[in-house]
Image 1 (cartoon, rainbow, N blue to C red):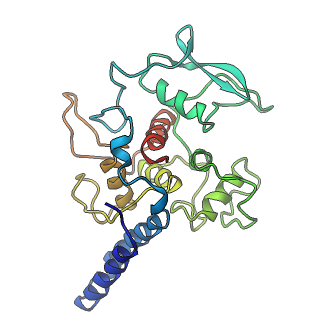
Image 2 (image 1 turned 180 degrees about the vertical axis):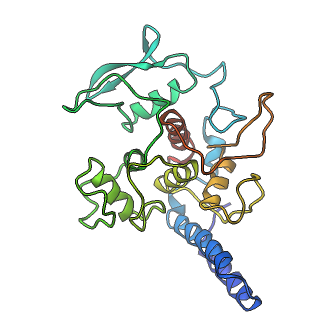
Image 3 (image 1 turned 45 degrees about the vertical axis):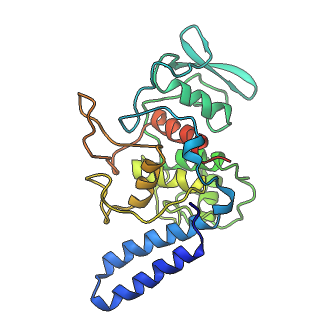
Length: 280
């Protein structure tokens, strides 16, 4: 099924019909946010495959970011650790064992030019990726911009964020703002703080220009109609980019944890799966 502009127009008619009934400003604001995200996603609908989830090759999951299955391919390795190429030179990531669940995803996003691991002050690879480190807002901006293949020198000179000037991430933050990505749009976000799961999901989906329909508020117990970026979370879950938490027995708890922190390994998985599902 394809969406067209008539869907967005119909949504606005529904909002107009409810205004006389005394809908509170907060509820109206949340509905407006969903409609704006939905309307923005329609602009790129012609470029997106109508059934990309069926054609994508993804790993099955019962958790938000689980271990890969026994049949998934393993990355190239030197000894027992993943080897990636940085600036055309092989680099062994000493903190990414080749048998860990996150190794295939890190390899994939590395081959796509999205990540390269940590570098020293002189720009040389350190051989570390930091899979358990929290992903920061500025790291998220860089990975999203590179995933979207955006020219960082073509995003103009405007910069709303007063903290970003002079930081290594300045150009990436500027591009995130220029593209209207929700987390960065008003310039108030602290680039150095850890990103939340909801922030990672909405930014990655916007970078890939994925459809973000209005939320239902019924998919997860902690993602309601009042949850910020709830529509993006539900869209990613429906497209099998993420799911939710499971208990010790493997049964879904029904929770997503939108405000929980995200580490770099988990973010690599979201981006890798997004390439498989959303990339043309």
